[in-house]
Length: 66
Image (tube, rainbow, N blue to C red; front, side):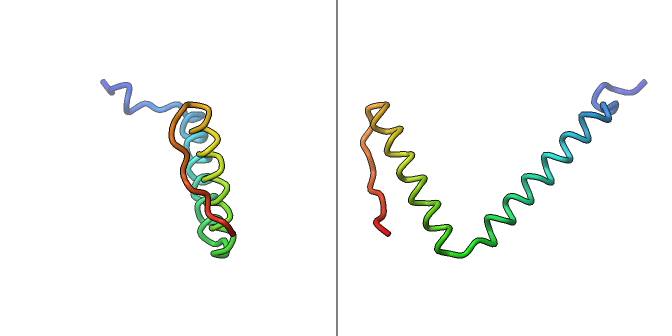
C-alpha cells in the first residue's frame, strides 16, 4: 500500500512547477536589472514602508534621495 504522499495529483504538480519556473524567471529578471533600477526599487520600497509605518503608528525611516 502506498501513502497519500506518494500519490500526487498531476494538476497540482503542473501548477507547482509553473509557479517555481515563474518565480525563478522573475528573480533572474530582477538580478539582471541595472544597478540604478535596483536603487529605484529600494527607494520605492522605503516609501511604501513609511506609509505603512505611519498608518500603524510606527516610527518612519529615512527615504534615500536620488
